[in-house]
Length: 500
Image 1 (cartoon, one colour):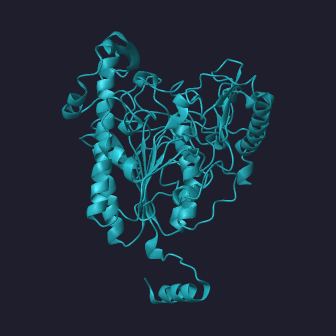
Image 2 (cartoon, rainbow, N blue to C red):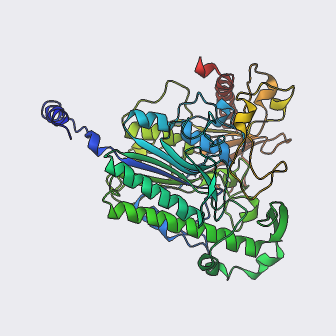
Image 3 (cartoon, rainbow, N blue to C red):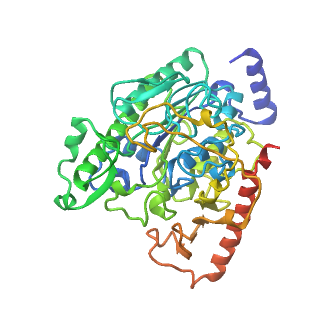
């Protein structure tokens, strides 16, 4: 601490009674996220077979967010919500492989203004990670990155700071944590607080696992070998059907390996004297996919706006501020991460429409319910591509470079898109959508091509079995009106009006 800052702090304390923390007390921040990791897939949430000792320990010592939601039931949109605090439909990240827009203000930009050094490690999926991409992690404010355009398996290929991808041999979660630890050590040498985003490739299919992890799941129910699921073949990159028992064995092995890697990170923070003042926030990016569904307590799966597609694990560890274990049933969502971190480091939020709220009061134990609803919307992209819309970004800049196991459009890499949207039409309001207040959830047109309205009491009926639309029509009508007003705001943003 400088002499000048010490004098200011003493004056503030003596004359104004305040307890403003010094710059040196700014927390380090690490955001961890599993890929396709559903709420029920942790031992602490009651899974009968999964072994997640590290996440269990985090849940037993930190703040367990029992009702934590992904902003969307698929990955790219949710990732955009974390980076911006805004619903992804505002900037055209509608579904996987739709990029973010270069004008968006990211949480890395904000934290840079607060003096943080920042790094991204793992899955990006908001545009190519190559050097000339206007939506790579560097363009979004990160100082360094070891990243992949999409998902990855064992022995993955990553791009380091935009350079051509190179293969790194090993278990992918452990690779990311080793890189994160190097980044942490460098920031400590430079005496700067750090912000690390670690987005794992696990447990996204196709699945694989180390022998020691596979061995943990040899005794799954015999009946599972009679149930076949469709997923990507590690050998061909094409779809294949396999019995669920061997698929789950590999999926659970990936989750356990990811859990172990998180433990290595926590151990390093403890040994390095940094764990007390590090915010460690874990969540999933969407619900469990069809290839991993087993004994879920929820309706639906990845891609759907029911709880099974949206509810994910959520845990915050920060020993300096969260001194005893707490479990919260307050609704929170990935869009909340941005404004929460802004408040924690004393930075204002951008003067743009945000869809998340700060849950810093929840961390402090002073928040009993959410101040505004959470909105969900699977945008209908078919009409978005009609009539050759103008690309938002030059197409060659949207071509990815990092290889993955799954073939799409005849290749092992991904190409992204984003388009200009200049006029609002009635069709723009289409697509499955939902709104969740502190008790009720209204789901409209739950699946593409359907026409329905359902109302659920999520507190009494988290499995969404009992439709109350005819019991509480007034509540449903008010929620639908709130949803429509929100959609109007989103479409105003989609036109690019926020950037003017």
